[in-house]
Image (cartoon, rainbow, N blue to C red):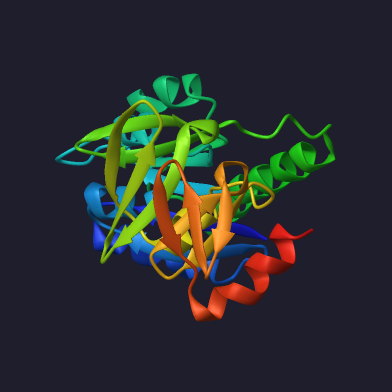
Length: 231
């Protein structure tokens, strides 16, 4: 199944993509957007396999948007302007749909995405990522997993405490960042805290000591933490 989103500033175009995706059993269109900032926020907190991107949009082109997103996803560009095709393919786009496109042409395009996903899955698994990409302060930060001391949840924001540098504050959910962290190295110990196993110095009275800080263990996280921590 391909998890997808669509971004287009024209609602009729989004309705067409929604309708077409509804007729293809291997594409799960999770959400549509007419604004680039909302789509960017979604991609910061959620992982998708495929993007349907309009190229010619008022605030930011689809090509600029694709270059800026903090994750590696396949893209199918959609536009009414054929002159953008070359630049789109230079970004290794899966396909380029020229509006108005037929359902048959759409199916051909998403099959290319499906075939490419299957090719990647059959290929030798690459080394696991060593970095986390986070959007904050109108920038994208590349954060090494080994630099994370702990992560603190603050309502709709996260504060990522780092070794040797100031914390990074990002608009993101605890669930969203847990999906980006290697599960063998990080654990959520409280509704407001995530810690890396390697930095835990000791545990006493349901308090974790690490880097001079004391992190509480929440009631609902206690059993799983001690199961993994004691090995």
